[in-house]
Length: 322
Image 1 (cartoon, rainbow, N blue to C red):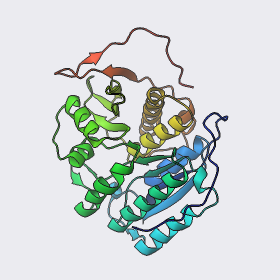
Image 2: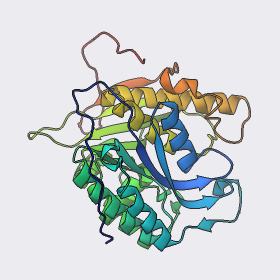
Image 3: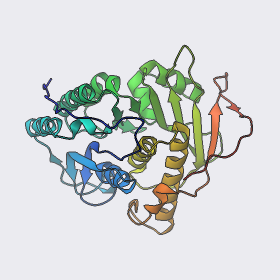
Image 4: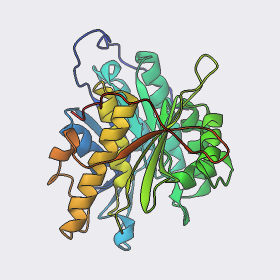
């Protein structure tokens, strides 16, 4: 593994007023559309965070739009670029590293080295791993790359955001209900797991399920956020969901509020983009929805009973979205 020599820095203390510090985004780059780096970086910049953007592959558009030329990043140049980032004067002040789609086995090793250097420089910094490896149709990449993500990056992550297929693949399971997803997520041992395609309890709905690791022998109840499904959504919703959740969390929102605002924001952008007939997510046109989304979503805590039914919480004053 590449040995990084991180620069020294003085991270902002937790008790100081909130200052949006840089986030390193490592994912695919498209020339047209809003997926991968373009979706995540723009979303976080719109929330006020400086972004250091690292492409893993370069494509004219999302593969779902048809065949195109894919530019692969030279593994040695990629590794040296990450070494350079670790020597940046402000590296220790980076608030998070986020990784998404990767294009080669060597990139996994280089990112693992960067994360290790980052944790040495800033032990309180977050590493968010979105294991973009596949969906119900199967793996997007060579199995060796997915295995390396599972074995090298997932164990280093503070937050992971697999879809339902990815969680099952990572854990070697085939869960058919939320109870099983929760059990498998906790076996991975990550502090926070955000499953972006859990089993909805409402009809014709999409569910995001937030699971925390056990602390002091007892884990908090998982939180589910549901909203109506939008037929044929544009590509990039997973990238936007992950980046909105990360951005709101880093801005000081509780995990529950970050989940609520992220889900509502994605729903608004997808709905508005679809209603106006856009081929891709119009993140720039509707970016005002990132801060103050208005779309209604349903929040509930989930109990771990045999059927994983909803547990109603005592009434409380609603938490504002902004």
